[in-house]
Image 1 (cartoon, each protein chain N blue to C red):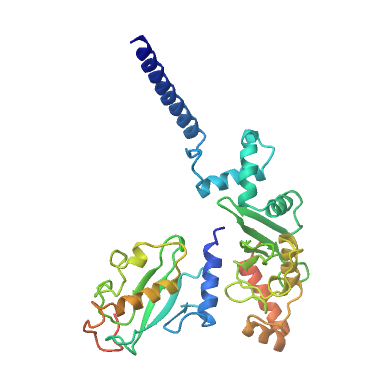
Image 2: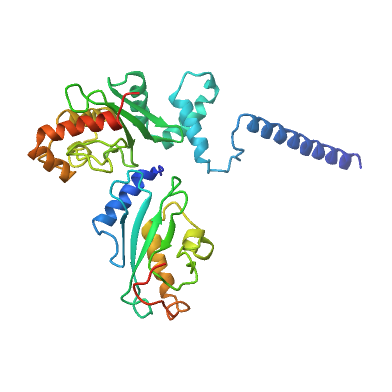
Length: 138
Length: 225
């Protein structure tokens, strides 16, 4: 298999995100349509059902550095959320506490990250955690 | 007793010669910066493959000794068609166009295209990137502008709306023909089949102003250095 360069990989992800080809439970796109380097992205995660997150829409900011996808993106919650892997001061997802970032593979995408965060919210130990009021931000 | 002594002696000699041989072998390997692999090892690091492929594309160099290995591995990794196209891009370049593969990914090219004369892009040099996907040539190359450009068929991220890159791709086309088509697109913008809608609208309604803006952007973002 040949190694797809960063920019063409990100263009593929953008196209999937723009056309809404991905799952309905998350969305993502460029933060600024002029960003030719495609570093800054916005995403949303729809809270999973049967949890304290149900019907909430969480906003996140993603950053794909020069080494992406060899290195994972940085991801930060904009909407306040109470989750063990999320730093409660900054909203950053801490790679040490989130397996998808910790054991990153080149085949993972931003969509993988968003969907796995949603799974994290639905875990039995996390789904009933008390949550900050809806709409509050970090 | 004597027989036993003989067996032990020859066995230890065998061991010693083995150790000496492997030490010499690893020293040689280190010297040549080759990874030490056993014959049962099928996995070869990708950087190693790339190094070897580079040797092959510069055939005739003093590293000729690595030839037989390189050709065998190259055939399996980089299709001959791509090697041939790359060689020809270097030996017989298209006027006004350069395409150079990256050292660490021979399917990924750095491209420059000179703006065609008598177009709003003349005197500009535009940087692009090109990637040959796994299915090339059954699938079209992927091409994108890295230099900002004001053109109705090229969007703000440098994506290009060009038929030969999409529905009209044919395996008979090549890297050079695709890049020539991109150059031709600069010479004849087509605002009726837009990708950048705002630019296309501008082009249709105020053509002179749009062309002036394209010239201005060329001076600003694509100066010939």
